[in-house]
Length: 119
Image 1 (cartoon, rainbow, N blue to C red):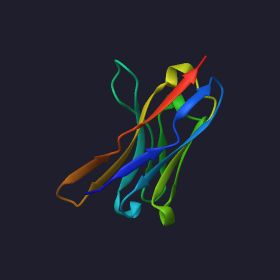
Image 2: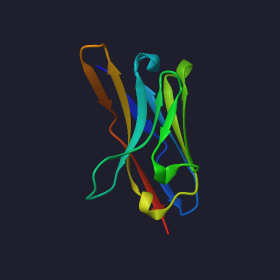
Image 3: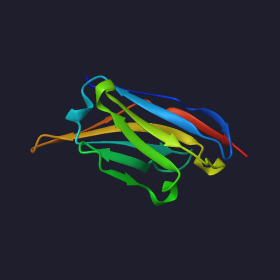
């Protein structure tokens, strides 16, 4: 059973920063891609940023230049550094691990960590 455990969420004022962490129960190199998603109340879950096994990164347009995704393979952890946070970014942030073996694909999700940005 793969587990992804997020941490680092909390309450921050607009313009502030937070760093989220996602600790995996297995070697993150086994995932083809890991990412961060978020879901605000009444809205659909959306991709924030992702990083591949080869450390190629992808960002949603609305976070480019403010958020940075990174990985530490030795610690089996993926990070999301979030700067210049805005109140509209209040949401539950989820860690995702995606893997495929050439036949099937697998998606793993954490329980989420709450980020609240006050105005």
